[in-house]
Amino acid sequence: MSSISKFKKLAGFSAVAFAAMTAANSVNAANWRYAHEEYEGDVQDVYAYKFKEYIEENSDHTIQVYRFGELGESDDIMEQTQAGILQFVNQSPGFTGSLIPEAQIFFIPYLMPTDMDTVIEFFRESKAINEMFPELYAQNGLELLQMYPEGEMVVTADEPVTSPEGFNNKKIRVMTNPLLSETYDAFGATPTPLPWGEVYGALQTNMIQGQENPIFWIESGGLYEVSPNLIFTGHGWFTTAMMANQNFYNGLSDADKKLVQDAADFAFEEIIEHIDGLADEALAKIQEASDEVTVTRLNEEQIAAFKKRSPQVEKKFIEMTGESGEELLNQFKQDLENVQND
Image (cartoon, rainbow, N blue to C red):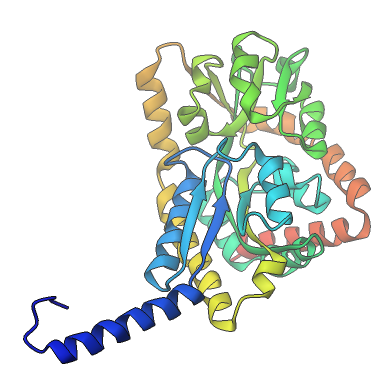
């Protein structure tokens, strides 16, 4: 409203009414805090900002996003979420696996296909993803809002590798995740758990000889600079989960619960579009930036040698998780079969 209104009496009334409405909205509005594990412009960051965009365009609430390192490492932001300091957190099952052992299912090699269309349909339709996982997260004080894929896993090493024997005597960095350690043990390597903040330096000093990540993360983190041999083993996709502190979520009004769910769904659709072609773009950037990079894509015969070793990882998963894990694994396989037979 213009402060030079001829209708001063009406203007004065309107100003008072506006002030009262603003005060009422500020009482109901909240600034929610959201932390994730990646850098500016990476997949989790894009998801977080799409979630923020939806919340802020459809309510008086605001979202403060914290990127990797701003509040600590992955374990730190999970602790802060469980304590209620953060309302939302994005954390991959690679770290959540110590809290929710069943989440390690994504690290059973060759369980997930690498075809993007199949992967996306699986995340949309899977009973294991959309019905069973929320119950497991709820048991740990977390409201699972969305699970989504980020990209095919790619291994980097100090030399090209085409067989399990090629990993012998190589220390491969893994997240602090027992099943992922089992995977690289099965592959013939020496799994070496390290927090992300130490990975670049450990590769640079040859403390470790390799690591695995989606290709966009290898590019944005500059890992190809110190680990230039890229190996596409076809063993799985990197998956992540966005969740809320459950006490916070349960305390929301029905309207705000719907707002949060709709925002999580909106961000999912946006991120699926974002990751389409992202791996090819990241690889092109890497190859343009370095002449030392090699790219090895395993053929079917080479993949078969790695696949042959994966049953021991599946067996270990069942040992770790018991009946609930076996039930989840059976449903996971059924869901994949349903999608692949459509």
